Length: 416
View 1: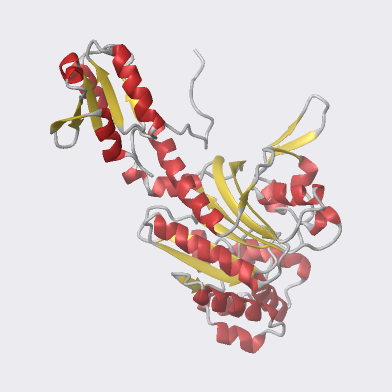
View 2: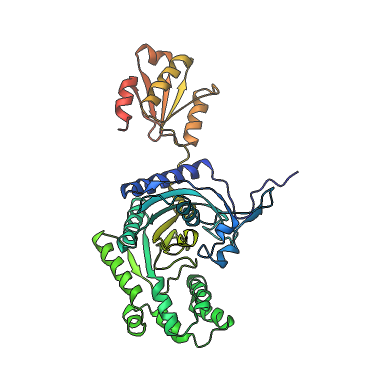
């Protein structure tokens, strides 16, 4: 017998989880569209050279890329995010009017370490603004993020930084350009291995006298940083974002100079969203400005900023609220199938979510079925009820029953 198990780091999404995921996606996309972002769909499969482009994810993410070859022996890969396919799409469509604001929902794949809230196949929901270098675009994404998590009733904090600040600190301490990305990757592990672990890893990588550098970063004092760095552009941009965020009423924003974001393509603003008082310790949304990546495909710089939401990890955080069925009403025909189907059709035409007994199970087993799937209401349709031009509605939570005409039922529950 074949061992019928999911590949390690993947999971099926059952009915309850998918209902929850759809609710999350609906809330997020409603917010995105309110801010003028339009839907787009790109391919899951990309040319490997696209995924490995100079300003794509960088060498670290390529270690986690699922690589394959087609029958024509062409090198392909499964996308590891939705930003690189967007850059490729922009390059293929040079006549797009900018700024171009899009969102996309899709599966992405990373062959990385597995832990709570992290999978090898997962759903991302991204929003990006392409073609604007105005820091208002960055702040707008943070405003959307704040609204999304407020609507999801999740307690959150947004950590904010600018990669130019980190670069300026590394420049002040004479870290060569070619080694800065290596150092940033270690700094990015702060939450996982703490300050002592970062120091140890940097020492093992050959960096010397890193104590002062790390102390400056980890004390998180922007004024101290401003005193020592020459290039103030990152601080100026950060202050602009903060100013716009205040005007847009962004909640729970915290400047964090140690925030690094491991992907190589970030060039300015960076941010990560974490949940408070949660078992989920990894970020639930993250993003930043990547002004060079699209240019690597088309030969000229195109400013861009984006954010990515991890639907699976948000879903994990909301598990306690999961639903077992989308149905609001479960119809039980009692020797009245033809009439019941007419009633079912009318209810569905009025946007009521209904299911019906398909197996003629009898009343008790049908009530048990509706209870198991937590369907709120059962509609009993027998000849006695139909003689009165009515149906019997049973509230499954209270057990109370009441007779309604079909039109009365529709008026009571129809959503406009």
